[in-house]
Image 1 (cartoon, one colour):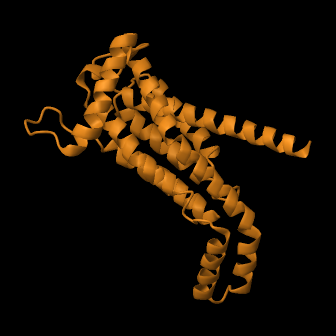
Image 2 (image 1 turned 180 degrees about the vertical axis):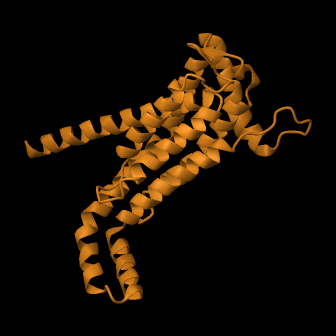
Image 3 (image 1 turned 60 degrees about the vertical axis):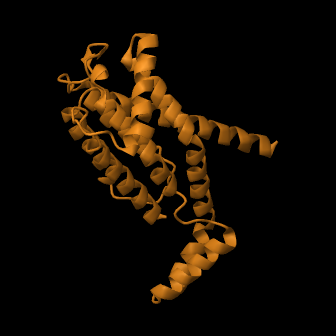
Length: 244
């Protein structure tokens, strides 16, 4: 279970680092590649369309982020189901670890056998993050490459320039911390620094990035937090009904 926690943590941290480097030069005279044509440009055009309708690229960012989170919501559900499955068999895993603590190969063999018998994918909690990455990277590139969006304002933020007030970097760090804390992972022990590393990383990058990017980040984190909250309420309500 700790391994799942580590996979999620390092995956999220890697995701942050990848996103910060996922922009491309729109001033280049070369023809955009297939990825830009089928993924990045349609999202950029959608941002322009919504920005025109609402006369606000901030609202456009919020709506597009919400749409993206709706697309990946089924994978979020699968991720939570995987975590519940792993928690359910954790006592059996503990027994195997105690029984075969001197035989790593046998332990791994027995654990895989248990996973097969229970119909569990041990990487099920990590796969949704890998599935989400292409979608999020495309949106990230669409934001960073949209020149019109970069000249727009939302509240008192110029979306194409870093936030000199540090409000957005701070909000990005706080919401990242809350999203990481509420992430659908197990409750096993972990080093305290893990809960702070990703928020600090997000703050450092948000200070340097155009305001549109941490704004998108904040919107995404808030939506994820609300999703987890709603799912937890639904789970509690279902459990109460089962007891009636």
